Length: 256
Ligand code: 13P
Image (cartoon, rainbow, N blue to C red; front, side):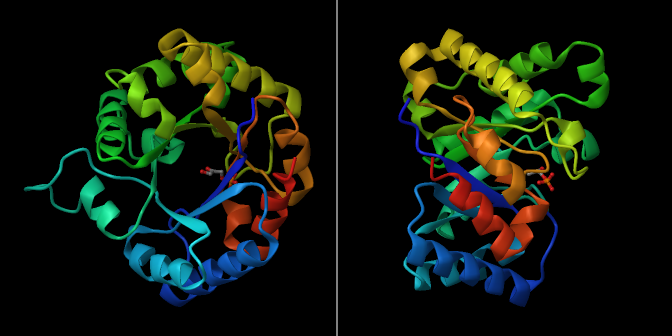
């Protein structure tokens, strides 16, 4: 136990340059003033990372800069892609990998997710690896198998010494952007089983130290109840991260 809550805003393909900077500034000012217990990060679109990073640093740097994706190669002929070292160059410290929208909308396969995880951790960055079942998989009783498979395949070849920079985000696909949140009991059950998989891979101490965020329609109204669960160590927030007030409401719920 003793895991520090971690609340990260995934802005997805939203905001414009001015809006991104204003949102980052408002979050950074609130965090600098309130000093919440939770660690806080914001993950703007690639094109606004530089401007958002500057806005965060100008306000003390208490809010970390995250990216929503990465490519697994370092550089070369990969048109349109962005490498871990490019992200690092901009002051990024966290990278989301394997988000369900990339897995299901963009059809990113497990093998690519795994290569991205290894690239991020290998570059010395923090990695937020997203896992979670679709509604069909849940109704088919496959939730635990899907989560275990996505954790195991995502972490294939990741050495134990890099796991300190790993965060798992459990994001049931049916809860993302739907207003339908997992119950605290369902979230806790999934998180506990994901932690057991981590224990199997890296031993109980590493599993006990790894943070597992919940994501999927988390809001200020349900965040405290979710984060009160023993294995729910924060949140990965979509829609509610696009307004500083609602995002900060969730960040405060991490004062547990
Ligand atoms: P919502 O909070 O909008 O449901 O999105 C969750 C998510 O996908 C965060 O990565």
